[in-house]
Amino acid sequence: MTTENIAVTLIRGDGIGPEIIDCTLAVLDALGVAFNWDVQQAGMEAVKEGGDPLPAATIDSIRRTKLALKGPLTTPVGGGYRSVNVSLRKEFKLFANVRPARSLFRGGRFEDVDLILIRENTEGFYVGVEHFIPIDDDPKAVAEGSGIITRSGCRRIAHFAFEYALRHGRKKVTIVHKANILKALTGLFLETALDIGRQYEGRLRIDERIVDNTAMQLVINPNQFDMLLTTNMFGDILSDEIAGLVGGLGVAPGANIGTDTALFEGVHGSAPDIAGQGIANPTAIMLAAAMMLDHLGIIAPAIRLRQAIQTVLDKEGIRTRDLGGQASSGEYTRAVIRQIEVLPDHTA
Ligand code: NAI
Ligand code: MG
Image 1: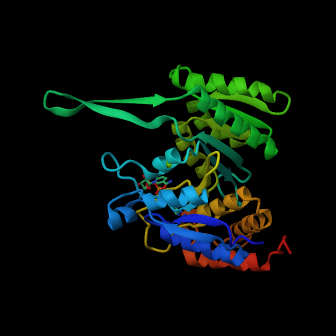
Image 2: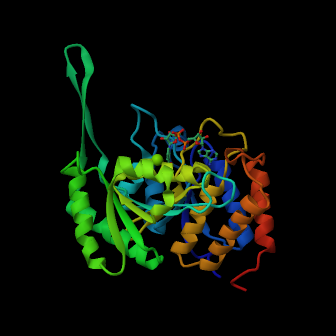
């Protein structure tokens, strides 16, 4: 396998980012998958270095490689710079956010969850059209924000989701919306997705559900769902929820896919509460790397990596603290590497 020629932009990220990216690189090494990493900066680290949270060099690199593996990036709350994650998705038109949640070990809240959430990644309430309106001496007397949803954006993500479902042998896609209240904004999303869905009649079951009910149903009985298709903000919230069904953010990967560029990361953020302690769970980024391997058609090592992770978490019970275990990030990573070494190499 000659992956050495494949250039990938690597952003280590903030907080726990550098620790869990190092763990992931060690695991890829053990798999014998060597990429030509182009290490670039973004987020807080980039601000410290050059004052810009998304330097031109980083954008240029991704424009060249069209592939990125990224640790989490801190976004200041309230004021400060705009989310670099949102900027990257916008810059590279990464319109589809694929967030799977799959049970990896027994003894959790649920044992047989296997869900895929597809989130529209560039429109809705995250377009950043918002402002304050001052009244008298209060500069923030009123806050006003708009969501923007386009029919072409809805068509694009609906096609993506339904094609993804067919490619991955999925049976049902549930469109999640709030069209009873946000009649224009998420009504257009629902209408367009149902419309595109008609082209898939006989091949996929497509239904729809209101977001608040979906949130509750997911907790009661997640297995009534197969794939979820939803707008940007609902997808952000529900993807953390489905991560919680299978152990939490430490095991939830995500792919941001555009027409020519793809960026892989964890669903989680920079976890400042545990950064620098060597206890973060690197599984989410490892699984994001597995999604990158799938995306590149490097299938056997991706299968091997997932098997190794599952064996360590389930059979060996070696887990980091977020999953109720005692292992450090390093101990867990070494256990995954041991499994990779004993598992058969499907490429051999
Ligand atoms: P967070 O996801 O960083 O943390 C939430 C909770 O989950 C914390 O208790 C944390 O310790 C835990 N956690 C998260 N990932 C973990 C891991 N791999 N192993 C063990 N425990 C883990 O969310 P929070 O605290 O709301 O955000 C922190 C920062 O991250 C903010 O600046 C936010 O904007 C940013 N963020 C960045 C994202 C990205 O880069 N894609 C996504 C989400 C948030
Ligand atoms: Mg989120």
